[in-house]
Image (cartoon, rainbow, N blue to C red; front, side):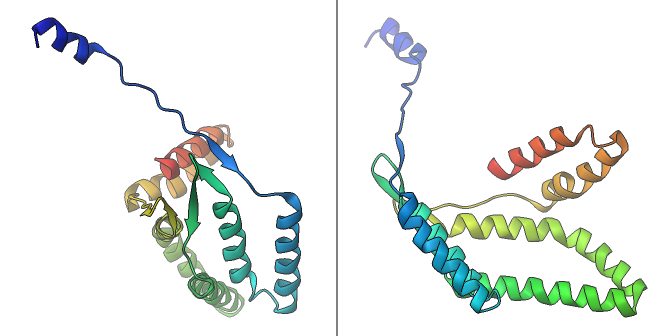
Length: 179
């Protein structure tokens, strides 16, 4: 191979690959899932909502394909239910403490402000870890510092711009989540 051939290979732009994304679901089949989910969620006072979430995501992921390969949703309803019970306990503790001990409620909010970026990262990590495409599970590599800046600091600072900076902040949050 001569030097000109090597230069031609190096200067050749990479081929752009396009992949077809298809959704094969239909409104009638989803409506039946949705109706059952709503009915059972109401009858169980919200407990069934974890199962409803799994059914919804399995339906949408299972009917979404790229180049003929479908997505899978791997989470179990119990995993989601445990997270929701934990969130309900935290909310109940805050409500009770704010009614009887306002100083403890303020402390709870301060702790929550610093815990929120970690919770957001864990939620994003969970959702991606429970998604599989072609037998490969996704992951999320966000860090606490970036989450704290994007979800706590920047929204707070946008207050001083009378929320004129909020579209930029939302774009930063979106970029953080999707990168």
